[in-house]
Image (cartoon, rainbow, N blue to C red; front, side):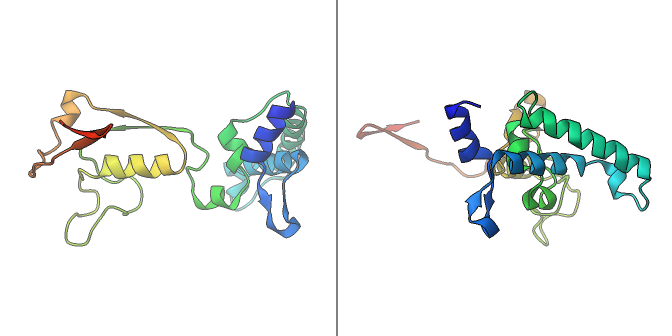
Length: 176
């Protein structure tokens, strides 16, 4: 890792260690990332885990550690940043980089954050859903692509209030 790589690593991927009053070193980051990824294996969350599974995952973790530590292979930047953290455990989609949403009324696929009592019923399509989803994922740092094809947009209701958009360019107002 060169000087610019080191600065980028420390700025972006090395997590702050409160108990040590410093940021992670490379060995600690690699350990966190490897443990975070290995612990995603669904077999570890079953009631009983065969010893062979533990052995296989231990071997995989050791190989993965060597590859990442030596920079022979690395996970995505998002993975280096978030894997193995409390945030990853709390927010299930924290490791995802990319999303896509069609701009049309849709039912909320997760949680009930957009449902206002007396306004929408659970699983009822909402005009706000694609926008709240888009905003939520952008705020987590992911990229969101979207579709505005006519078949989708035609499902959106017309805005019932006139909106005046004023764009300030220089010192003169330009009305659109």
